[in-house]
Length: 203
Image (tube, rainbow, N blue to C red; front, top):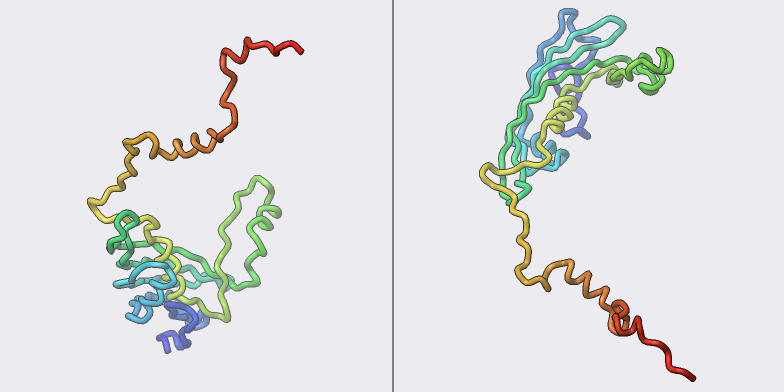
């Protein structure tokens, strides 16, 4: 059981639920560190070789009308495969977390519905995250921002992409195969000058 008094969600790689009703008026400072088992599940969800470490810090502040502001940082070190050499490469992640949670009844169906009420010239706002069953899951929030911070094209230092060399033999070039397909046996490749002036023989 987490310090918040709620059982973690076993369907999530990293779960740490906090009950909104139990938040102090002055707010709550919370530090999380993912266990080895949680890091393995995060790695599987993120599609990386491994998550070597993952920590998150949060400032959770209650706001009027039942809303909650959550800010903080998630830091992690992940191991990925270099997109060039496929060798393991480690990358550090340091992502700022900022989110607002609200009761589902206060969240519009879509951002466009808000724009429709305020006029077409109004900017489409970012909708709050829903407070589900009176709980905010900080572990899930940290996982989302951690995955956003992963480099989609990791490259090992000093490794450069080398494009394939052009074949020295022109017949080995891909366009040579295309040319060969066009040169169908028995199909004339164009009229010769002699055939242009040749007249049919009389009957």
